[in-house]
Length: 254
Image 1: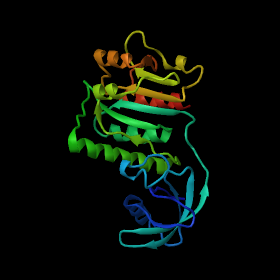
Image 2 (image 1 turned 180 degrees about the vertical axis):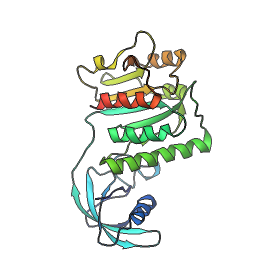
Image 3 (image 1 turned 120 degrees about the horizontal axis):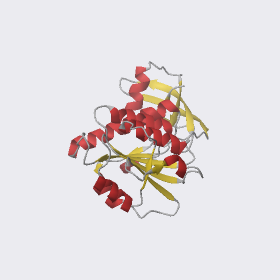
Image 4 (image 1 turned 30 degrees about the vertical axis):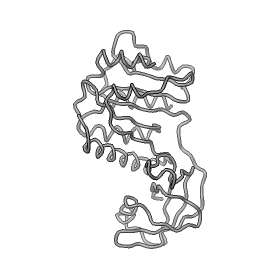
């Protein structure tokens, strides 16, 4: 059954209009009144809507009741307390890879169950974004995450944060807690295998920092280490930026 993210209150019996993105998708699929769909609204909420649209765990059956030119009306049905989320929260901070690789990274990280994604500009970043262009890219990546969540069965859409420089992001981090883990993907001598750190399990909240093509500079790695990030390696091979980030996520979320 087609699944759609609907950032609105979901209550059994309620009749509501789908948001524009979901409505367009329903029309593309040529669904008709009487057809069934699945709705979920858990996880990410736009800042301005958080108070109005509380998150609901699980998902809801719904039935299409009306198809307009640009609107779709549905009636919300039974609630199902289904969660397919990872048992730990892993946040990915990544130096943005160039071209379309960031889209692919966001999509696959969402499928794996990442909790949030922080796009970063670093010294070696090829992709440079600021102002309106950065805002549009972040909104685009959020839509990629929503679509991936609809496809993979997740009910918690990971938040894609606004683009920041690595230095600014590090400055804004809170002090590291006793139950938090911070990992830095590094090719420098002295980085220990990630698998060794995971031998006794994964922390409830982990942040994984990965660089762009070419990795982070020595100065950037030193700044990250000062914020509590432990340098780790995934093995002897040099992986592409997006492959390395996803490999680390898969190990952390396994």
